[in-house]
Amino acid sequence: MKTIPTLSAFLLCLIFMSPSYASVMVYEDFDYGHTSRIVDQGNGGVGWSGTWTVTGGPNLIRTATSGFPSTNTAFPFDRTGGRLGHNDQANSANRSFASPVNLAQDGEVYFSFLMSYPDTGYSTALTFTHSGSESVAVSFDGSVITATAGTGSGASSGSFAVNTEYFVVGKIATSAAGNDVLSVNVFKDGNVVPETESFMVSSSGFSLGGTLTGIEFTQGDSANNDGDYAFLDEFRMGSSWDAVAIPEASSLVLMLSALAATGYVYLRRKSCWGCCFGQ
Image (cartoon, rainbow, N blue to C red; front, side, top):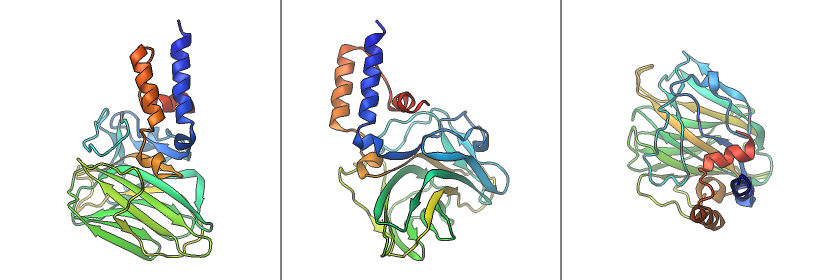
């Protein structure tokens, strides 16, 4: 009686280990204890080196709102657990990749995340930390989203409201001999994410060199520790648009439908992550 459910789970894991899903190199869902400090429990996910750290002021960066549902219907993945909440302008949350991204070679790396920002007068940003001092970042400031790579930047205006969750998908195109470019798209509630890559803004080219070593989340607000949180959730980094933006491969849909019809197993995607990666 145990064989069929076990086999079903195994087949689901094989789907996630297919080329599309295996191309997710880094993942963090912030599925930690409600209102726990990120430095106390921030060692989950895959593709990371070490735990989350906090740099700067008081340690008020926390995982928050356990079971928080996505308020953005454009977000195509299953979502459970918490999210990272940050309300202190004086500090940042940081974590390093297990495998840094080499900017001195030709290539592409894709990423996605959910984020909201709390104040129109200050910039809230997800920055890719650099082995030197260069900046590669996606930032919200008022109704403007900016993509920055070194001294090159590009900005796009839109109705990006405060305290509203956005699904951000981007690409970093690296070059051995030329310029590196950061491109970004932002999806809000009601949008449909296209099946092929599409971007609303790109940085101007700038030759960076070195490596991208991890990410840093900074919150922009007019006051520190005022309870006006920026939020980050569901960070993914992979080698294709599909890996970070389009999870519903036809093979996965067919397999889930077949399993549901037989009544053998019901597994959320994050359960499969646990099955495959030991979470």
